[in-house]
Amino acid sequence: MSTTDIGWRGVAAVDVEEAEERERGARFTGGSRELLAELLRPYRSALMVLVGIVVVENGARLAIPSLVKVGIDSGIPPIRESGNVGPLGLVAGAVLLCSVVQAVARNRFLVQQGEVGQGVLYEVRRRVFRHFQALSPAFHDDYTSGRVISRQTSDVEAIYEMLETGFDGLVKAALTLVGTGVILLFLDWKLGLVALCSGPFLFLLTNWFRRSSADAYRGTREKVALVIVHFVESMGGIRAVQAFRREPRNQEIFDDVNDQYRLANLRAFRLVGLFMPGIKLIGNVTIATVLVYGGYLAYSGEVTVGVLAAFLLYLRQFFEPMQEISQFYNTFQSATAALDKLAGVLREEPGVPEPEHPVALDRARGELRFDHVHFAYVDGRPVVPDLDLTVPAGQTLAVVGTTGAGKTTLAKLATRFYDPVDGEVRLDGLDLRTLAADDLRRNVVMVTQENYLFSGSIADNIRFGRPEAAINDVVAAATALGAHDFIAALPEGYDTDVAQRGGRLSAGQRQLVAFARAFLADPAVLILDEATSSLDIPSERLVQEALHTVLAGRTAVIIAHRLSTVETADRVLVMEHGRVVEDGSPAELISRGEGRFADLHQAWLDSLA
Image 1 (cartoon, rainbow, N blue to C red):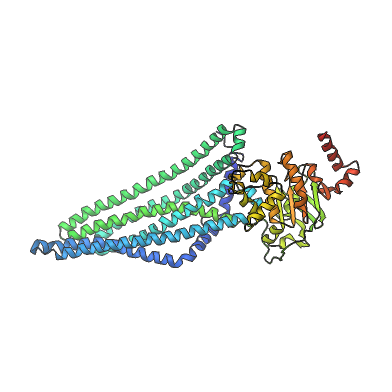
Image 2 (image 1 turned 90 degrees about the horizontal axis):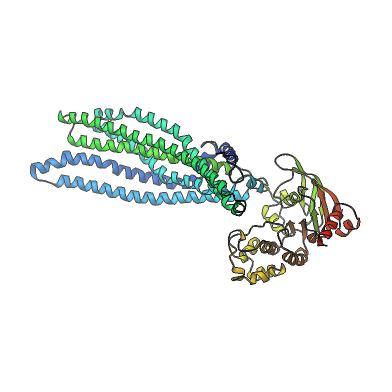
């Protein structure tokens, strides 16, 4: 099937996004290495303790085969000769002691490893969440919500899996390989050399697996991102999906990306399916060879039976770490792919960065000034070529114009969701780029036609901008906006849960709650971007009546198609292609009898007739 669309973005588009992400974080180099080092730095002491615990645990484990040798060679003969079980009892006690030491060390290791791992996970999630919030809306317009979820879930879990199993396996494997190799040569150098002849074969097999699995495990990370993106976007737009009977096509697309993920995992499993049995085969061939040759040496009296038994036990331990190393490499590949993506995201610079030395602004008067502002989006085409505009403090300015005239861009510049390419946007004479985000957001608030309501109560949504506000203040804000009556009529009043995205409220009710939220925040500048377009006529009348209260004593910029909203304005701007083509009071522009605003007003009157 064709993969030209995924949801409404396209598989190809997501593939391009993943390619760009790989460029941001380059295969565990640079930023990803630095990120891992930063995350582990606070736990350096704990990591050293963990290494010490692993050393103790492996020391106890490596001692057991040697104790078996002593038991066979020195503990059994006294029983045969005199019935003295003391030496064998001492050896058995030593084996039991080593087992207890192993168990205690393992317990301490798992507990402390969990503390380190959870601490790292906490810090990763905190950093990613904080950084995603700091990035500009322009970034979030391009970065799909599914990829955001993938960064916070599967990628973070991949890092934890490496810390949980990888550290233990790698350190234990290194200690076991070195320790066992030395002991084998110490027990009998001839048998030791025979056993170590397997080394080149192990090296070749491991090197092949390392090279082949790198791309395979990176592929699984990329394909799971496709699955998450399509699932999240389809469920997020479920109303549109059902309204346009999109379910069959979306199912086809999901089956396709899901199959890609399945095939990517199968490729990784096939590699493991060759590597794991290969290690076992080399190990068993080596054990068989040592058993034959060692048996001959034992028969000829060159080694004791205890040495041969200990040797075979150590050989089993020698090959076990190879499987652990392969498992570590699997988790390491997944974790490095995740680190690459997370490092790439964390290196993203906010489109509207915080000033290094912000100018303090407590309560603004509310004067807005656009000083020869030029702005263009990423394609370079100017949306606002040269805007020179002053909105005095306390003035209510209405901005009208056709779609694409630059009205919403003006609102986004005034709230500093974007910075101008040239020129300055000033609040009370201060360039917005010099103000701290907290000061700016406290003084300038925007209400849009699709204001987001969060899961929780109506009261919590109204006090979103002022979490410390008392319930009396919440009720007062709702009353001023005409929202109190419908809220009070709900089963739980202000404690009613609005559900996800405010699904339990009508569009008009959601907008009234958003107005109350802005009113309670009490900004110096209030920007309404098509804020009444989703209201029905009764709700709009309620808002029109409340607007006089809401706008009193503050600067307001109202962007609207409905001229009923514009009637409350002191001044009207008509924009076209990012330029102001008409400017004056509503009465003045209407009295001219001609012009864009007069034509719009006449068309509105005709629609009411």
